[in-house]
Structures are given as C-alpha cells and as structure tokens.
Image (cartoon, rainbow, N blue to C red; front, side):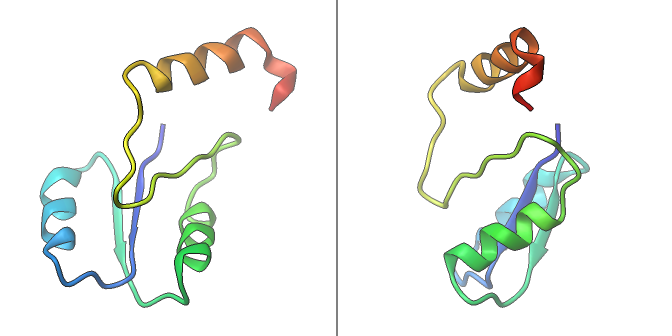
Length: 80
C-alpha cells in the first residue's frame, strides 16, 4: 500500500503535520497546482498501484473501509 500526500502549498500547518506523520510511511509532496483535480492527478502519477483512491483534506474513511476494499479485490481478482 502506498500513501501520497499532495499539498498545493497550504498555509495552515498541514505540511508540518504531514511530514511528521509520514516518517517513511508515505510520500509528502508540496508544490503549486492548478486546483483539486490537478492535485489528484499529480498524486496518482506518483503511484504505481493498480487500485487507487483519494481523500480530500476534510474527508474521513469509515472504520473498516480499507479492509473491505482489500477483501473485494482479493475475492474478485479480475476487477483490477
């Protein structure tokens, strides 16, 4: 599993928090972008996974979401 944090240059301390939490677990990239769609595309370009998703700054995943997604693709390998 890969995590990419794509930040368009937030001024609210997001970069500092992301860098602290990353600690080798995810890649943090801070660069100007041309809006949300551009930032999402840039993040996807930095991965080499077959299955990708994203969260915006104020989104949350429900408990068990990643397990459920993983189970689905495990049970349906032709879906990828």
